[in-house]
Structures are given as C-alpha cells and as structure tokens.
Image 1 (cartoon, rainbow, N blue to C red):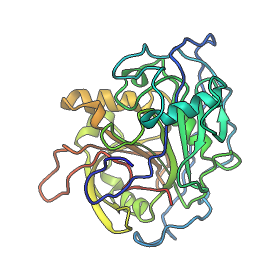
Image 2 (image 1 turned 90 degrees about the vertical axis):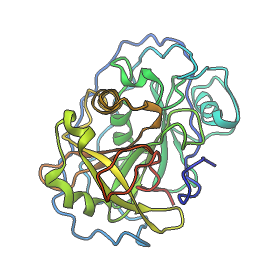
Image 3 (image 1 turned 180 degrees about the vertical axis):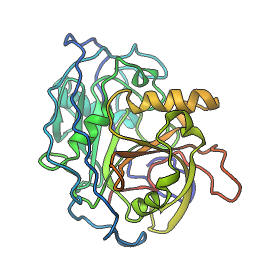
Image 4 (image 1 turned 180 degrees about the horizontal axis):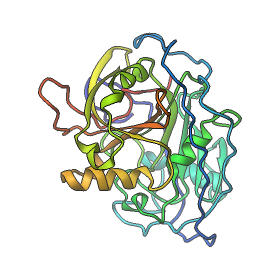
Length: 316
C-alpha cells in the first residue's frame, strides 16, 4: 500500500475521496463546538505493546450531534490540490466520495455519512475503530493550500464529532486518535482524516510530558518530545513529535495553525507534515496536537521524525 518509511510496514491508509471543484451555493457556516471536558488521570491504560483492543472509548464526553452540513467554495483545480477528473488507483477514495454524492455509481461504497462538506467511510480493515472523513471538494492532501484557509470547513472538528458515541463512525477504543499522513507516506491522493484508536501507552507518555507541553502556537515548532509508538508488526518504536496543547478544535483550524506556527517559520514543506490529534486526559482537558516530518531537527539523543501517523494510531 503506502510507501511508508522502512520498518513501519504497510499503513492502513485506506482510500480517500472528494468531489468536484464546483462552488456550493450554501453560505459559509460556523459550528458550535462542545469543549471536551477531559478525563482526569490516565489510570487503567494498558501497556504499550500487545494491549490494544476494541474497548469502550473511555468516557470522552457526552454524545454530540453532528452539525448541520454547510457549504464552502472548493479550491481551484491544480497540481497541488488535484483535478476532479482524476479517477482510479490513487484516486479511488475520490471515486468513493463521488458515489456518496450521487455523481458516480461505482465502486460500491458504504457511505456512513454524507454532507455537502464531507463524507465518512469505513477504513480498511473494516472494524469499529477505523473510519475516514473526506472532503467533498477535490483535495489531494495536506499539501493543498485551500485546507489552511478560512474558506475551508473545519474538518478536524467534523472528524472529532463523527468519532463520538451515537455516530455511524463511533470509534470504539479506550481513546480516540485522529490523523493525517504526509504526501509521501499515504497511498491515496485524496485528503482523509483517520478516525481511529490511539495505541495504549501514548496517553501515558503525553501525561508525563504535560507540564512542558506548550499551549502557545508560537512555541509549537520548538516543543519536541520523543514518543514510543508501534510498528505494523506490533514492535515498539520511538519517533519525535512537536506537541501543542489546545483547549478545543474551533478556529483557526489545525491545518492553518500548522502552516502559520510551524511550516512557515521553519521553512518546512507542508506536504511533508503528519498531524495527529488525541484528547488530553489531565488538567482541564482539551487536546494534544502532534506534528512530525521525516526531516525534523531533534535535540541530541532523540529519535528522528516521521511523515506517517501510523506509529500512533491503531487500526486493527
């Protein structure tokens, strides 16, 4: 599947899909976000290796209702954002999005939710903690400039809401992880946010670093910590991540935060970035936002970075 870095194995990146670059007439809308209350402590988290199972998602707040679908202008077709005519192969997820929207009839697709901004699909392998949220615009991936603008829907907030109890894509796992891979580590060229579990032990490590994790986006690029995740064979492996604490997933959207706080100040390439979100289970709650890239400059003694979220997320 995806051309992930050596030692990571095949990432369960399943297919992405998006819809054509037509303008949608609905006015831009705003969503009211119910702030995650947070769950104090990390007691009961399982050991890192060999302990990830399909458990309840650990009391991550009251059941929210999905917001009413809104509308936004899609990006102009381009090499960075993709072209609506692309189909098959690395664009199979895009084909699936169009099936959900009724503009295609194949391939057969189980559309869990369809709105004017996004669709939600099962990931592969199909289970209770592996789903995908995809734009209905043609958006190739994290490198598309459109997603880091005020005109773009808040796909991260949409993903979090759709991962909650009562939704067709409820992530049944001790804790939820949302993630987007870099351009070079994905196997589908349609933006998709993974709605998945996060490996046991990740939260424990983040708790240990909590006092030193910044909540100031201006400091995010320098807040680098090593986190041990799991390879596809279940073996522990460390990678370094820039970590930011945010109180909620409201605007500015996380793609914009990443661009303005990390990519532009460091001269990095947006296409090389991986981004993961998981709840903060200590203090006043909120979320941890983890960012990494293969060329991440780390402090002496720390492991290198990565362009894939697969070390952190549990799909199987």
